[in-house]
Amino acid sequence: MSKIKPPGLLFFGLLVIAFAAIAFAVTQLSTPSTTAASQGHPKWDVSSMPDTVQFNDPSAPVAVYSVASGVKEASADGPRELQVKEVIVQNKSSKDVSSLTLRWTVTPLNERTTVLLRGQHETHVLRPLHKTLAAGHRQTLKLSLPKIAKILKTVPNADSYSGFAIIIGVSDVVFEDGSSWEEKD
Image 1 (cartoon, rainbow, N blue to C red):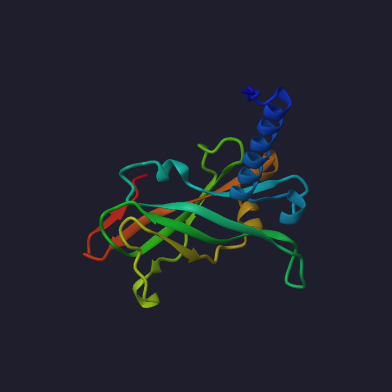
Image 2 (cartoon, rainbow, N blue to C red; image 1 turned 60 degrees about the vertical axis):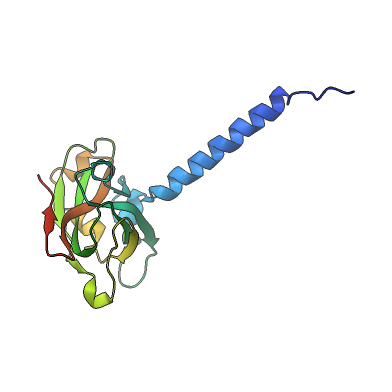
């Protein structure tokens, strides 16, 4: 009877490298970023992301699960820039949602607790779209954000930052039963 040899150190090292490469790739996909030149500024880095604090807050009935961003290439309409294209929202409650309003917050890239700017999107009324965000489900919403470069140029002392995070969350929700929830400041 022959003994089975345990995998060698080389095999283990390759496995660790493979997992690290996968983790890095997933991180890069989940936080799209564009460099400064694409935003019309020579040094800014910009990333868009969901509000993970809100997502992990059990009192928030609906939260942004993911943010899909991409770089719009330069054209006759303007320079290359980051665009937030859509979000996936998750209904964490036991009620169906008929409408919700998303909000955005601009923070320094490496200090996400300091709010530099904030604003809201138009309310997403789901019923005319023949949609309801069902209890416990996710839904994709297309977005039309103001141009991010234009927003960033209004940040006080913008040149003192090397980059910004655009954090997207939910500010208010109306449920099918007529009740509502509003985010507390």
